[in-house]
Image (cartoon, rainbow, N blue to C red; front, top):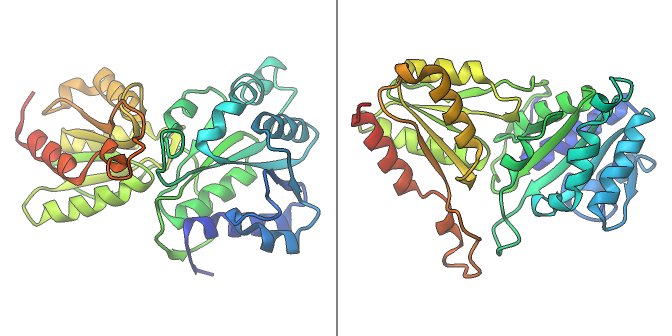
Length: 320
């Protein structure tokens, strides 16, 4: 049955539905018995023995979750903001991601690390670190841009035996009718078909990309918008097929430009299909700087609508 939900509501509805079928699912995090994320109060009323408040230590939460997964539980570990993920990076990078490999497949960690991309507030809050996480072998990374994708990817995460990082982009506030269909990891979505240029993005930036594509269509520029949905694994086939069709590509992200998601995608395209491009790939991303303290300057770090439109117009008329 379809329901009108936000991304956050879709995520906790997926968890609630799977909890009814699998009592090994547990939710551990900082303040999970009281805070609003995931609508924990509602989950706590329905599943009081599956939710555990944890110490304020991201390393402790991931370590405990890894141990629990190795004895058969399915933990969802809420680390809150992605700005806090570096505090647990050793546990994610060197322990959870490698447990299966260093034991010859004997250990099978199955866990979800849930983090948020919060509103931009200061130099230490609102950073977008997803490109750091997609570089870790043994970890899957999802970043849905719609409530339907959030529901489907969370269901897939709860049914897999892998380590998954589920990222909620809190810049997205829209609601939509959601059906409980699982979405396979590594499956991108074409949000808008076009023939002039492929605009690749994910999360909140997809909403901006779709708006710009619709505006440019009125001026005769046909933009294809590709939503990655998962950063690890990437849907390489869909990316290549779209770029082959348009001959031009622009990547758009809220993370830093250097060594970012766009850098990886543009490199893959140049390595495999450079002779099929009509113009060089373009990367649009956050400036290589800290988020300003001034509220008037914070959003200037990220690609503006004017920058995106100018890049699209320039690449459409250019030739290699």
